[in-house]
Length: 277
Image (cartoon, rainbow, N blue to C red):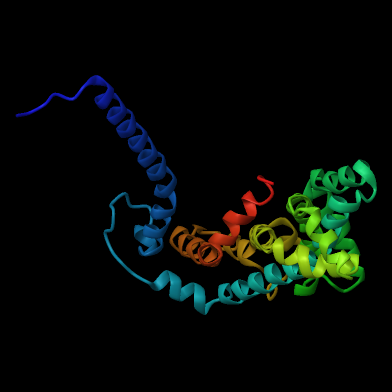
């Protein structure tokens, strides 16, 4: 004997169907551009503007990039992004902790740190180039590491400051009651507890340094160019080599995808750290 479902059972099903359909549509819109770039990267250059789904298949674009200066630019980006994060994180952690626990400098100090992020990069790049040229740091990876660390420092400081404010101060008081100094409590208690937030800040700093273009264009040379500069160099007098650019984009986002996959748990914990006390 069949039973008719009531309206109260049908309406929730319709709502769920509409919700899932909308989510699938949004996911398709988000995934379509990178999937199309991936498809173009495996096409010959003469077929790169074709509307067909997959009229041919080749790996020549990747082979040509790896055998050219693009491979060196790839390594340069890894060195610069990792180096800038390793340089900036210790300063950002100590500064953010000072702002969170001791209110160092008051609200004005926090505002000044945040205000440095409001300056347009084009207003800083020429003075930076003049200074670095006099210090013989232009056209060097060391110069780019210093610049990216300085650019990311205010951003990382504000992120870590929020994480440190979410750490219960009772943990530090308990450690100092047992004989630890303020620095010992910070090093042995606060930093391990805040590891998810530090990992999330490090990933965000890596992404910012990896994608930066203007300072890399001005301060780097043929042997020290990074990924964004190398991708821009694929635009020649004959036009944009769209197939090679697509292959370069896939190679450029690959480290970010891998890093996010391996530390996804830390990123989720870090971005929600301190929201519930």
